[in-house]
Length: 365
Image (cartoon, rainbow, N blue to C red; front, side):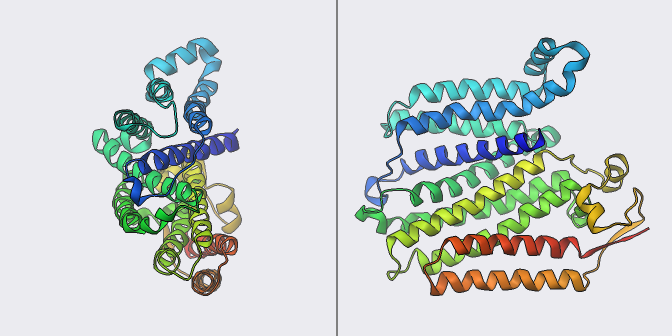
C-alpha cells in the first residue's frame, strides 16, 4: 500500500504542475508565448484526478483507525475532525468549481483569473495538510504554499512549453520571460525549502538524520535537485539561448528537465510517508533505522552515542563517480544534441551522490 500512496502523491503533484503550468502561460501576452494546444478533455481530467489522488492520504488514516469504531464512523470522523479530512473536502469543492469554470482550453480574462485563484486555493489546501502547517501554523502554511507554487510553476512551465506547438514563430520570445521566472522560482524554492526542512529536522542534525528513512528520503530529494540545477543552468546558457540548436532539441531538453523534476516529486511523496524525526535519537529508538541503514551499517543498534561525518574511501569513490556523471552531463549539453542520455546521467549522478553522502557518516556506540 505504501507504493500506492507514493505513486498517488507523485501523480497529484504532476497534475498540479501541468494545470498551473498551463493556466499560468495564459497570463503571458500572446506575442510572447507559443500556442499551447492542450486538449480540454485532458485539462478537465487532471482536475478530476486531483481529489482522487489527494484522498489517498485520508483513506490511509481511515484504514488505520477503522478497526476500533468501524469504517463509516471512522470516515465521518476523519472528514469532519481531522485536518486531512477537512482539506479533502475543501480540495474537492475547489476542483468542482474549477471543473465548471474550465469549458475550453483558452479562457477569457475573468474566468482565467478565477481559475488561477482556485488553483492557488488548492495549493494552499495541499500545504495546509502538510507537516509545516501542523507544526508552525499560518507561517508554515504560507511558506509551504510559496514553495509548492514555485515548484509547480517551474515544472509545469517546462513540461507545457516542452510539448507546445514547435512550429510557432513566437517561440523565440519565450526566453525573455522564462529564464527570469525560473530564477525567481528557484530562489523562492531555496529559501522556503531551508525553512521547511528546519521545521522537521534541525540543520545541525541533517547529516544525523541520514540514518533514518525520513532523512534518507530528504537526502535523496536534495541530490536529485543538483542535476536539475546543472541541467537547467546549462540549458539556459547553451541550449535555449543558442541559435545553433533546433527548436526540437530545445523542447526535448525542456521535457527531460521537467521529467527529472518529476523524480523529485516521487522523492517528496516518499518523504511524506516517513515519520518526521523531530529527535533523531528518539526516532531511532522508537521506530528503528530502516532497511537501507541496516544494509549500509550492518552493526547498527538502536542506541548510539554519536553520529559523525567522516568520509572514507567508499564515499570518496561514489563522490568521484557522481562528479564524473555531472561532467558528462555538462559535456552532452554543450557538445551534442542528446537529451535522453542527459536524463539518465543526471539520475546516475544523484544515485552516486546519495551513496557518497550516506557512506560518509559513521556511528560511535
